[in-house]
Length: 318
Image (cartoon, rainbow, N blue to C red; front, side, top):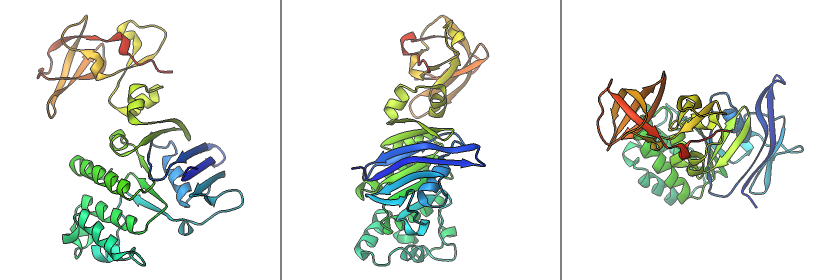
């Protein structure tokens, strides 16, 4: 039996705008789910419905075999054991870090609290106020507070979006390890595919209120079934098929690894060569379209470059 069971959730605004369209989903205990999609696709509405801050038109939510809502039951937000962590951190600015945390420690094991403080490396921050610590530190504190509440379900709404890349990467690793160690079931809403790839066990893709894909990142990357999913991945070239004399389709997907810069019948102009850790990202203009790939060698901007593509690796969208 799944730990979280969501059935047939519908939500419309003004009887026209579809935010959630008959969404059903099963989640196991301790599983981490990422929900991605473009702005306005219904991600945040779905999270608000689960948390109790938005009324669905219909549907059911069952947690650990107990209904949070159905046709006969509706628990208010404060009656559901669900914690939400937003990108704004939600710490009380007039309280110290210690005071913020102690709001959640009532009737909880003090040893558990001390362990969380230690593994989160916030021991030296306890007497400071939120404005006196960094954004990454505030998010670590907010997560500790969430864990102390011992929720049945954790909802993360863009928790990393306001952070720099270095802090974001470290926090993703820390968050995932901590959630897994505590076997906490989690749903992450994000627009960043890197968040989803590094953080989640499963990735759900949402479009116009519908969940159109449910898979892990490897499956999603290897076989994005349509152009919309390909555009969310951000690491696939989406190009007109006619550029390469291919018929019967408008656009195609082309992975950077499917482009060979050693030789080829196609010739483009290098727009930029961006240094990475152990390679270069090469931006190429070809017939008024841009594509990118990677190279171990530096290639100057404005150089002409010949390339080929691996026809058997082209992604054909539905």
